[in-house]
Amino acid sequence: MLQFIMILCIAAHTLVTRVFCFWIFRKENKPESPERFVMLLPCYNETLGELTRSLDSLIAQKNIDDHPRTIFIVVDGNVKGPGMEKTTQQYLLEDILEPGPSRTFENGYRARDGLFMPTKVQTGFYKGMPYVFVGKRYNQGKRDSLCFARSFIYHYQVRSANVMTMFNNDLFEYIGNAFMQHGLEHIEYLRKRWALGSITNEFVMIFRPGIILVERLQSIVAVLTWFITPFIMAAVVKLILILIERGDELVKDPVFMTLISILACRYFYSLCIGFWLPRNWFERAQYFVGYFFHFITSPFCNVVVLVYSLFNSDDFKWGKTREVIDPEGEKGDGLGGRGTH
Image 1 (cartoon, rainbow, N blue to C red):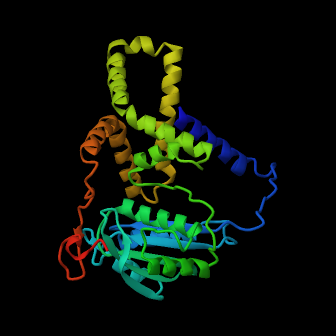
Image 2 (cartoon, helix red, strand yellow):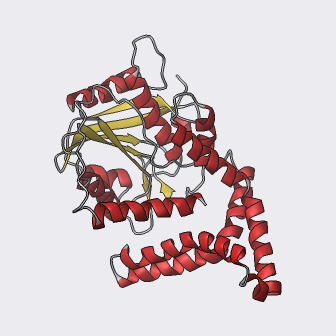
Image 3 (cartoon, helix red, strand yellow):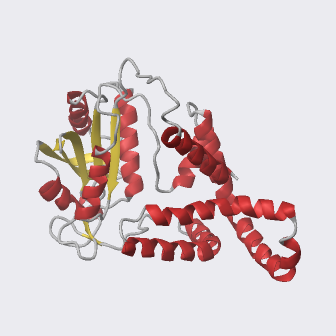
């Protein structure tokens, strides 16, 4: 139902802004002091093309030219995917980002495993946009990168000489000075765009003070949806059985058809995306194959993922299907060379 309402809102917004824009004049409301943006880009094993497209999409955002902003790039380890000639960090530092001042901190910050993470920090510009690059020497997962970025921005906003943080003081001061140089004296709030391991974060946001009502409601819906996944699958199976046994009767029932139409709206909207979003016929074919595969298997896959997640919730090697390379070219996550103090 919420997804149906979301689709209606998108359609209404499109009609108002695109179709009736000539008859509706909106008074532009500009704040006295522009908001300050830190645009977070967490990376792991992205290719040269993927990195370039992601950065260009941040550069291409409209109507924010007056806002001080910085791209905050956090790379998790040194990894290669199939067909990659370089690691993600090498692509960024050697082929994409303009060179700038850099510094390596052997005890950069305390990672999720409790050990200090060697970290390289570089600042500079990408197509005129300032960036702060943070490269972690070893793999700890994108969730660790999100913790790094969010914790840093929080402590930067409430910074005090007497507060202990997870960061090396020199690293904190180095990145903080880079933010100051680009007009980011304060960052008023964090806006969550996406999060790995989102259910844990959503559950925390339900009870955390200072969260606006809409965000809290969205978190409640996300957590409840996660909990009722097995019941959703059971309902889908039961629906299929009922359609097989009493399909002729149900299609004549107006209440049933109304509910089915509402549920089908989201799938129809997703189907339509395949006609305008893909850039060529190959991508369009990929989208539709994935769409129908998801349509058929998603209820069952969700339960499989749910069960697997519960039994492997403490495994930090999820998705670690790429080769992890240390500075000497050996495999490993660096536990032998890291300490707690």
